[in-house]
Image (cartoon, rainbow, N blue to C red; front, side, top):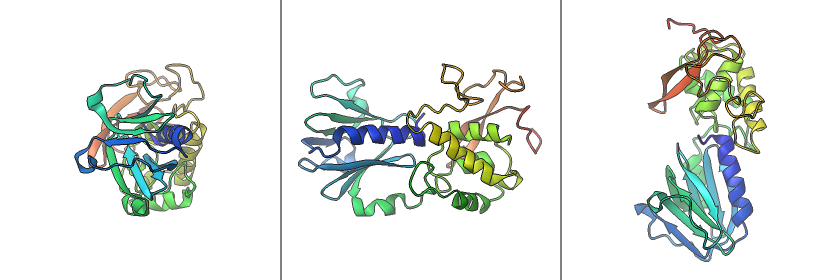
Length: 264
């Protein structure tokens, strides 16, 4: 599941492959940008901002993408067979050494680089970015004290980067139930610092390991482990939907280690 560290790794790989290269062919398979042609422009950089990827060219153009739940950028050598069906392709950026193919991209925009702030200026501090400011994240969390902490941690306007896995894992490690209100969380600054620590530990791999054990099935405390015993107390891990972005996302927690402050 793409979260901030996964996106950072993807952006880094794209940058290493095609930065400084001239685009020899481009194709955008979304109606709004179907006629856009960036051929001849040189890729200057590819960077991550929270869960967003920004590919910039020397003509002052930015290709913005967001994976949402299932998106990915693949890199292929010319003539290499693509690992996915053509109907899932949303963007093709060809250079002489590499072809970048965007599959199932949840969002895709081609904008002037000068308009990036208008597009992403709503985002909170990026956990893995140069703008990280833990005090500002705490301030934004406290601005809505009655929100459930699990919901608040997924709000990219508050903190950019964390997704469902880190939300669940951070709440477990901090000993707070994800359905607790923000103003019920003790040491909110410590919880925010823990997000930073976990995501920094995975920024080179994007594997979202929170237990310190990279072996299959042992990398997480609660996320994806509904119905299994807690690694600490033995209680059965639970899962339930929780409001997020106007919809619902599944949340995992241990009823033994994370006592809920309201009726369960």
